[in-house]
Image (cartoon, rainbow, N blue to C red; front, side, top):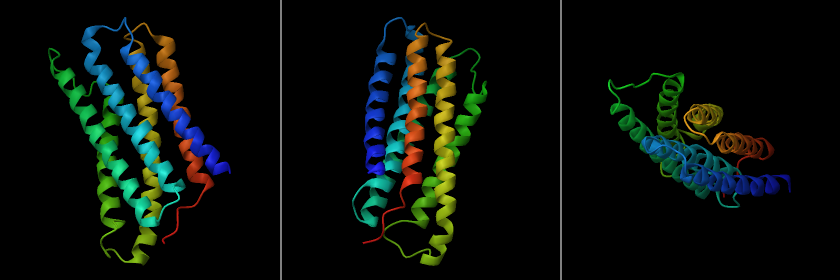
Length: 208
């Protein structure tokens, strides 16, 4: 029952995050020059808080076979990866317009690049080690690799959410919507903790 409750809470928090984020980035009073920054923030929230968070939660909670759970998990993480690349592309083009271009001028940017590299690595690592269509590597090797994939994946997820909150703090200094930005940051961190609780409370689904 606790797992179901956390699953429902995760769904509700995700919906609220989406609604509040849309309200924030659609609000008046934001300079037109910040359009690309808004799109970047929305894409990153969609990537980590929504797609990746749901990928983690669904793998732990959906009443489906192990193969189906892995397929859903991998598909949602692929969507998260695509959204990440889109977000990076948008902010890169935005900074390229500066005179001179100001790439990687903040810690937030460097951490973001590190996260992107780790997410790509984790997706390729998971795709090779735990794909549903190959017997490579062996079951024994998969059991040894599983904790690495699990805990490194959780670490990347946490780091991504924290960096989103840091990015929102930077965004807050550029606009006059401080309270709304604070709410989005708080909800992103709340969604992260709810996701982590679903990982703690239930073991992965068993193969069928």
